[in-house]
Each structure stands twice: as structure tokens, then as C-alpha cells.
Length: 263
Picture (cartoon, helix red, strand yellow):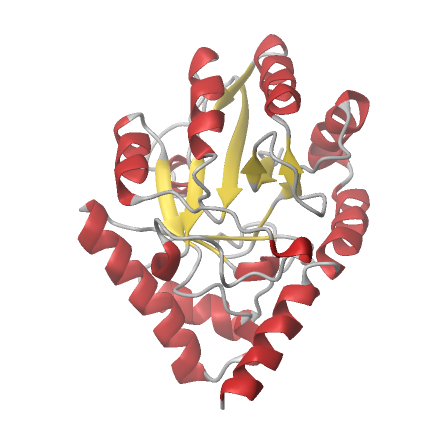
């Protein structure tokens, strides 16, 4: 049975347009439900070790909790998860560590601060994993081979130099990748890659691991159904995620328009 991989973004009570935020109370209720239902957490590095058969799988119910963009609100998430003995994985955009999310288009021009290296190092010491979310959060399928290599390689090297750890996992920006992107990432030394709203390429493709996006509208019954669907009905999760992911293309077109104006 597949291990569910959850995808969060921003855990905060501060208002922002859109649905990729979760309130602190909502997130705590979700973590408490996982704890009361016997789940334990692992990192993607752990998952790779299981799949490579270098360590034995646990008989307990297992889940992986990931956070795209590595916002400073990770401090809220980590404090809650620590109460339940949970750890997570976060994916940092190397050009924006410690900066606001200027790469993203936001209604009302509200900006969110990314975590700095001090917080990322604290998470590593707590057992978390830090992965790459590329250099600038570019939409990789639109880029040339050399641009893809630059986005992936530079991010990996920058994060490794600052954190003094091997960066082995990557989250593809906007959840999208293709066979070429996966191969480039693997050739760069990544062991696992996670997507959102992508069709499954292979049951054991560690470079295209599917995640369940958790959003503001996921009240408790919906959250519970998403966890169950991740086990038994991935097609339903895929359909929901495709709808949510379509809204992220506002940021993609915003970046393209901005580049054209500059050039």
C-alpha cells in the first residue's frame, strides 16, 4: 500500500487570497487526528531507504508531511508537529531564502516571508528534511534544457553550501514535471521528486511521487477522506488537485509577462 504524502504551503492565521493557506487551528486538528489514528511520520530520505530496501519498512501506519516554498510560518507547523512527535520535509527556493515571495503573483499585493537559513537549520536539527524547490520557482516545462539544469543544479548547490547537508529531494514548482525534467533532476543527484496533480508514470517512480494537497477548504471530514483516498482512490485525489492547480497558473503568466516587459 502506498504511503500518503501530504502537501502544505503556508500555516498561518494571516489572511491571504487563495486556498493554499491553512490556519494554525486547522493544522493542529489535522495533526491531532493523524496522531490519534496511529500515524507516524517519515522523511522522503527515509522513504527512499525503504524503497531501496536498505532499511526495513515499519508495520505502523506511515505518512509523509511536506511543505512547499519553505515559508517562515514553518515555525508554526514545526511547533505543532513536535507536540505529536512528527517531523516533516520542506522545499526551499534558494534565491528567496529569508526573503519575501516576490516570485509569486498575489492579489492585493500581499507578500509572504520565506524562512531564513537559521530556521531551516533548526528544522534539520529536529529531524526534518530540507529539499529543493529550484532556484527561482520557475515553471520548468517552459524552460530550455540549460535553463532547467541551472534552476535545479544551482538550487541544490546553494542549499548544500548553506546548510552543510546533502539535498536529495526536489519538489517541482507548480507541481509539474515531465520525463526530461525528472531525468535531469536524477542526474543532478536527487533521489526523490514530488509532484502535485500529475498523472502517475509508474508505481515505483521515485522521481514522480504523488502528493495530496491540503488546503483551507479541507474541513475535518474532507481531510479524513483525502487521507483515505490517498490509500485507496488516487484518481479522485488527482481530479481535485487538477482543479486547484489550475489557479496557480496566474503566477506562471505573471512571471512570463514580467520577463517580456523587462526584456
